Image (cartoon, rainbow, N blue to C red; front, top):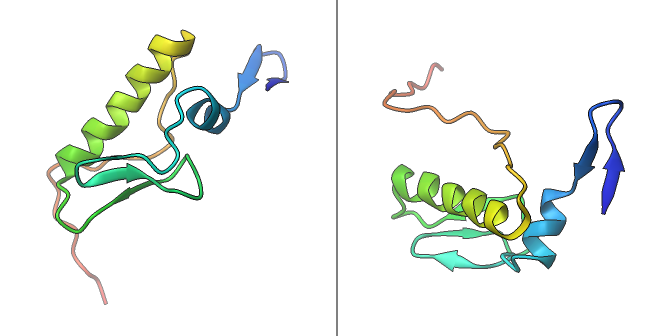
Length: 88
């Protein structure tokens, strides 16, 4: 499905592509996978490293481009090499 995007061209549903073109919903690669109920949610096992999560997401991005010619951009912020402190 395509949607008009207020003068910016056409918007495509990435969720639709992941589910209906790449069939990734519920697929796992090692300790990281695509949530079985929603294709825009990545899930991980406790043992997964941040590197595995980033690589999984990067591979999805490459697969989308190979199959459709569409470049997708993540809508998440990835924090590298920082320790988060609990401020209670």
